[in-house]
Image (cartoon, rainbow, N blue to C red):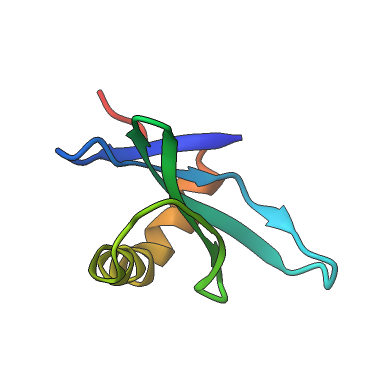
Length: 91
């Protein structure tokens, strides 16, 4: 399951996954950034808690990817919290 987080003015949408277990039975989740293009999408996906990029495709710049990494790093506790709660609850 993926939950919406936000959408930026360039069309980049940010979503996060429910909590999963890896092969070592550790909790992981994914933060995915995706922007529509004429030919599909620019995409980059981070895995928590490693903060590694596990998927990248398209034309995001290095500066954009660094900005996304900072968002993931600063937001990690919240992504875990919201994932446990079934997404962000907005009135």
